[in-house]
Image 1: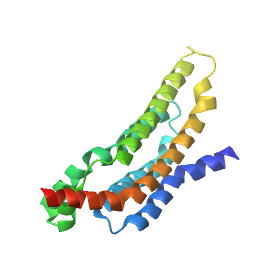
Image 2 (image 1 turned 90 degrees about the vertical axis):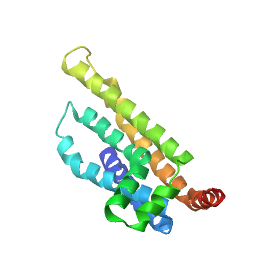
Image 3 (image 1 turned 60 degrees about the horizontal axis):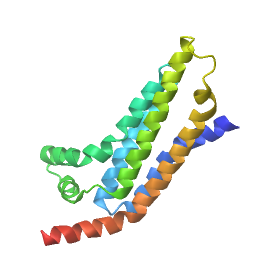
Length: 180
C-alpha cells in the first residue's frame, strides 16, 4: 500500500506544475518558472528507473537531482537573458526584466535544501551499513521515505502558493518598473 502512495506522490509535483501552469499561463514570469521546473521534473522522472538500480549511491544521485531543482530559482533570469540574446524573442526579454525572487521561491529553495540533507544523511547511513559500521540503517528504513513524501507534498503546496500569488507579484513588479 505504501509503495503505491509513494509512487503517486512522486508524480504529484508534475501534475501540480501542469495545473498551476494553466492557472498562471498569462503571467510570463510564473510560466517561465513553472516550465523550468517541469523540464527538470520530467528529467527526474525519466532518470528514476535507472537511478533506482544504484542501490548504495541512489541517495547521492537523488541529492544531486534535488540540487538541480534549485537551478530554476537561481539561474532562470540569466537563462532568459541568454535565450533572448540567442533568439531575440521578446518573451525572454520580458521575463528577464520582470523576474524577481519571491518569498515562495525562497521557501521552495529551503525545502529542497532539506531534501538534500535527508538524502545526504541517508547516503552516509547506507554507506555505514554497507561497510558494517552500523547494524541497522534506521533513518533509511523508518524516516527517509516518509520525510521525502512530506517534502513532495509541501513543495506541491508551495507551487500552488506561488501560482496564487503570481499575478499580484507581476503587478507589483510592473509598478516598480514604472517608478524606474
